[in-house]
Length: 408
View 1 (cartoon, rainbow, N blue to C red):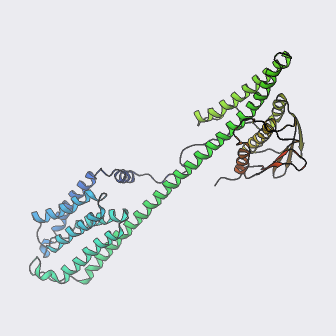
View 2: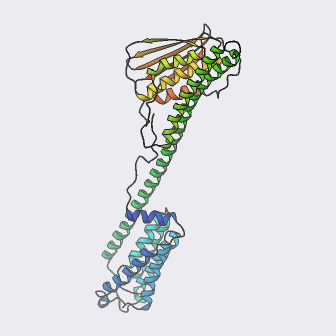
């Protein structure tokens, strides 16, 4: 029997950094304290080193107010997953105030980059663009017009060539952020597709098990029902015939229990191979014998050179014949049935006929037999035709390929 393994067919790359990102994103109550603290220390220390080469060049020395602005920009990043819009604008504003005060350039831009990165990854592109535009426009205004009234004293305008570096920095932030956002959307789409594929496989497996149990139980219980009626009718008048009916009931129930146990074993031990091979057309004589026990004479005709069928096709062929004979026992007044097995180059043709007429008695069952046969044939890429014959009775015709169709 086919096995279903519940694992996903593929997985996206799994890295420690990505796992931490997903954990924080999936837990709104969790704040990224560790990364924010490391970043705050890096910004403070990095700015101190950068200030050594700039204080003599006209920038203002670092003081308590500068340290506070740097700390505010870093602390805002604690909420970059909860409030990405506020963080993007907040880091840009704190950096702009820092630069307008004439303090040295340095890692202050890193807080803005991470704030805008978080906003773009969260799907807030307008906020990220607005924050970067705010910072850039403010920097242009300060460095080319407002420098006369802002510290340090005696400062001159910045060259326009310096703005090219700012443009490159902005483009780099946006490019990296957009790439991360597209990859995150791709991973989310792949995760949804994997979940849908797993649900589809689970549904297909449930249908397969339901068909197996239906075919096994319907056939065996039909035989048991007929023989039980014979046994009750002949218990007093013909004890030997009643004994034969009880023997048939015992044999049919034992076989049904064995096949049900085999189906259930596939559920309990999905990693192991089946203990018994799945039934196929080589067990057709057993079906004929069981049908005979139910009072049905079956004539089997084989045409063409026998070909090896795939296990799924062989099982489907066996179950289709089994279900068709079960329906004859249940619903037909005829006590004779004919099974024609025709092997062709590309597959197998089955035809099961009875002469009727249909009975009106309630034969039990769920009414899913024909639907199950069609599902089996369709799953393999074959076809099923079932309906009354022009000359009376009922006919089931099935065309099955040699090998099942490829599953997409």
